[in-house]
Length: 161
Image 1 (cartoon, rainbow, N blue to C red):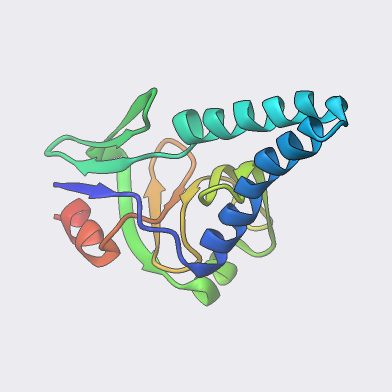
Image 2 (tube, one colour):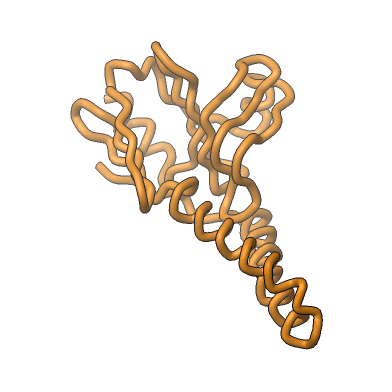
């Protein structure tokens, strides 16, 4: 069963749109005379492409023996027998689970991707595109994962069966 990364919610969509304005804005200013902004515009475009292709997963595939996480340029398999539990969390429950937290990785453009350093749980792998519908995946031999698949309830049922 395959689940795409959930669609961005309004706060993340607005932040993404604001960030997407920066490269054309820098380019426009550069073309109007300030050539120094050509480099930062090109750097932003390169970073945005890298985030979209390397950090932002496209789908989560629940298979009989593995959970397959697929990005445009890579994939990762988590053995199902390494998954202890998968459960839904809301914002309040997430705060109780992790305490204070800080993102390490890509954030803002399409979501938050990479590591989440947390007060209570240490480093958590994080691939979220929303500020709700969180799925917490507890693992036996590695860090927990926090993701936002589409249809999170169905995802948890599929992974728990």
